[in-house]
Image 1 (cartoon, rainbow, N blue to C red):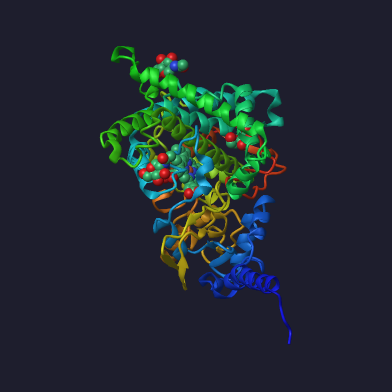
Image 2 (image 1 turned 180 degrees about the vertical axis):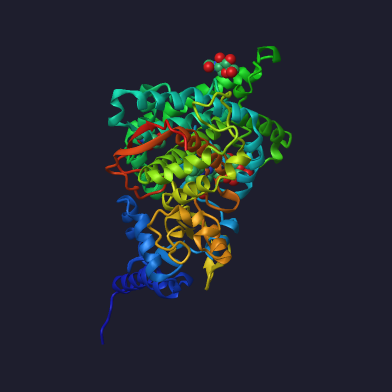
Length: 538
Ligand code: HEM
Ligand SMILES: *[C@@H]1O[C@H](CO)[C@@H](O)[C@H](O)[C@H]1NC(C)=O
Ligand SMILES: *[C@@H]1O[C@H](CO)[C@@H](O)[C@H](O)[C@H]1NC(C)=O
Ligand SMILES: *[C@@H]1O[C@H](CO)[C@@H](O)[C@H](O)[C@H]1NC(C)=O
């Protein structure tokens, strides 16, 4: 008879328990085990998805997994991905909460709306600003219209005119940089008022410095976002997975934003006599936050924000402001870059677009004798080609193509055919996949603005409905992009101003392919186009 000593028996028992918990249970027994694995190791280890993320391969690999295995896939023992409308409805319209993943978007050590973990704190913050970003407000805002006038006619078009007329014009300019500056000036003007916002268009050295700081932090979010516990643990041993200059860059961007806030605050608190009558100087977003916090303060300790936003109101306003200017300029800048790149490949389409733009009244021609004004949002929205080229760019080159993780609610939920999914499981969708559904968008890799046109594109009503239901560039549900109406209006105005007056040609588009990650622009971080003033009018 074989006799085993107690230590041997104990270690066998422990081994069996470990094998059960970490291999057998997740692979065979867990309710998640019925969901197809993206990679053979997905049920027992997060290594594959972490490695894909670290190497900037996540979007394409997750997409490949969906093509192979269907609309719900398991990426890791505790992580899922969905890519159909049913999944979007359950997760995003269903209000699944965000998790710690978004905490790196806290600024000054306090949360903003975007980084809010729970729905309750998120809603309280959203109440303070959603009104000023609503479609009706964006479209009727005198402040925004006046700001747009100065930015387009006073800054952007003179810059483009001068390069198109100069001998250097054949070398072109880096439009990614110029569009970045334009969208930055737009959003900060709306936030702080024109005078306290940025003037990046006219300050090239400083904006390069600023964008440089912003860009330098990008590759270093992996450890704090994906492995927060490991990062904190190693910090105890003075091992910092994020270089200290990333912290320095963050501090400088925070200090810059805080300066805008302080200047705006001085202006807002000055007596009525000190205020100027120019509506462009109204700090719309800042003002809305101030009064929102005032209202919330009436609730006292009852407020869900009592120990954050209400306790640190100044830092909280600044945190919100830096988030909007970051979320606002980068995404829109990327969209403009790809839109101008696609248009530059099709001069005939530019001419069609120009013809359409010149039907606006007032139009945006530099040579027109009437006073420069911006067209009404209603008229802009009624231009089908303008709308279609923008939508198709947002589809194929979504500026946030990457996963938007949420957490499954307790105690459990269902996703499509899969039931009993426990709470606390990370689940997300990515626009990169949702926008590449070949049944909805035939030949999905092709940039084809005709998909978004009216009767002439041959789509049935049902196909159009599906097309619209799958458009996900701004996410969906309670936490979808609060700035989507701002972005659409601003982008249509920029395209309108530029293409009413100029033709663009590609000079250098090397590295234009989109990176793989969360927010993604051209791999080379540049695009050189040349501009030609259109003299003859169609
Ligand atoms: C083409 C331009 C834009 C695109 C493609 C875009 C896309 C998105 C997406 C996909 C989300 C959800 C992200 C997630 O949950 O992980 C989001 C959220 C957000 N976006 Fe945008 N965005 C754009 C422009 C803007 C602008 C101009 C602003 C200006 C304020 C803005 C402010 C925000 C904010 C504050 C949130 C968080 C909303 C919340 O948590 O309630 N975005 N955006
Ligand atoms: C454009 O803006 C993004 C976000 O600030 C930045 O990462 C990138 O470097 C900028 N690119 C250029 C060419 O200015
Ligand atoms: C902020 O804006 C106000 C009003 O437009 C202006 O008077 C003031 O000089 C600005 N402050 C700074 C620091 O630019
Ligand atoms: C703030 O309050 C919330 C509940 O309202 C609580 O979950 C959280 O732990 C508190 N945070 C701090 C830093 O006290």
